[in-house]
Length: 215
Image 1 (tube, rainbow, N blue to C red):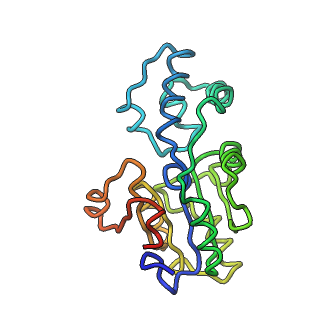
Image 2: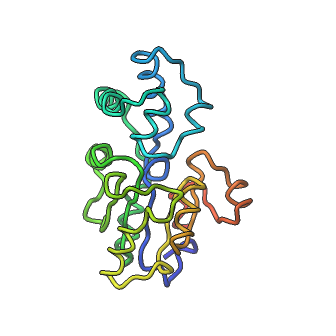
């Protein structure tokens, strides 16, 4: 179906933030707003970049300088709808095409279940074309630790799919390290913080965005 997805690939898993949806564009603004209003802290892009990609519960504590994760998460929920993520234009169509081609489709993300389900509903993502989902709430491990994929691998075994028949598509080097460590294939997308040159330096193939999967 695509030069980027080999014929022997049976399952295509996606990262969510900055792969299927543009998170940096709005959520960095949200974190800056919360840090300023509730913690009197002026967050810089450099501070956010340093911690970007870790699970939300850890991220808010690191960014706001607090150990009270419950309160910090509460602030993100209060302002959640003021700073909505924007879906990349081709995301829904790509998921449908891959599923229609007979591949299993999954989304594995470090965001929590509440935020993820909100995004799926907000952007009218094609749930009928998504066979598997996994959030930070479903495992104690997080990328770049390959054990983050243990629940997915267990599910794949039920489908008689082996890790080498899977490709994981994500925007970060932590995505790359985790997926390769789990035995998956990896394809980078350049819609996050990692450039084509940086992916290449680490021996990974990449494309500008998931819209290029069909090319």
